[in-house]
Length: 206
Image (tube, rainbow, N blue to C red; front, side, top):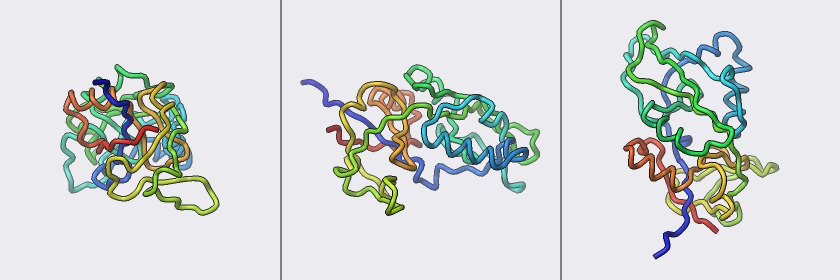
């Protein structure tokens, strides 16, 4: 039996459990440029290494940060563990990149356990069929911008079959707070036991 083609969407960007309290070093030198980098990355725009932090510092003085998850948002930058990065590096990220970043406790000198990489989502595909994805939200009436539903489930999002080709990790510029993965990448993340924080949901491929 031929396996049905599959695309996955991550619900991590809508999940409060993905957030971690860190301040990127860039924030202390140029706040507006740092926010601009976050916004551009969320749109799937390729960015050079200098637009990403090289160090991040724990926000809370009275909390000792332990080893972080395989995917999380640190100070507004999406970050992965070394184990997760090893999987991602084997796949087509388009013009995207993984940039090493060092995490420190609040004292800015004690390292947080683990190795980490910031993710540049450097690939775009306009693939979501908004008229066939009944539960998505349109936060601004006059703009064709959409958001995934709360408590997203399998098959809530429909995508064009053309998205089966090209990069394995991408952003749809018409969809906020989400990124998409090929089935091959999703299965590799599962095989490496690093997929849990991605909160993967199946899309309907049309």
